[in-house]
Length: 119
Ligand SMILES: [Zn+2]
Image 1 (cartoon, rainbow, N blue to C red):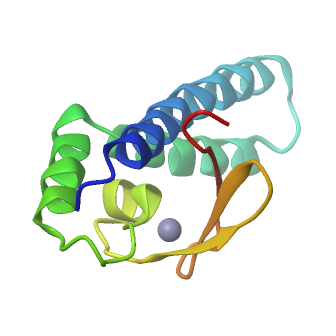
Image 2: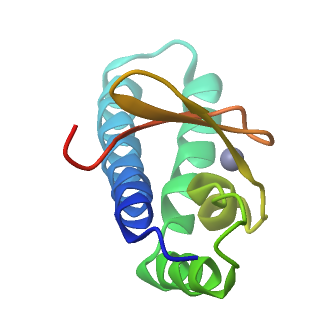
């Protein structure tokens, strides 16, 4: 698939997702250290987010890019979150609107708002 602008925007989203998850972890670690209640709940949440953040690696992002390039040009873009985090292929459905292109993943139900080139 040739749409390189879209690919680089989706890769940016997955890279930002890792930064967001690490930010969530930092505040959870703080909460865990300061709070004496809900310790089990907090540590379960930490484990889940740690696993998610750990799954976002350069190697997996490279695999996503390779997979993207292997798709034909009429194929729907694959969801970067499903591919990188869960190792699953799920198509994004496009819903073109005003100045941004809106995509939604059928699997994880995540919305992606991608600015169109020149918009
Ligand atoms: Zn998805």
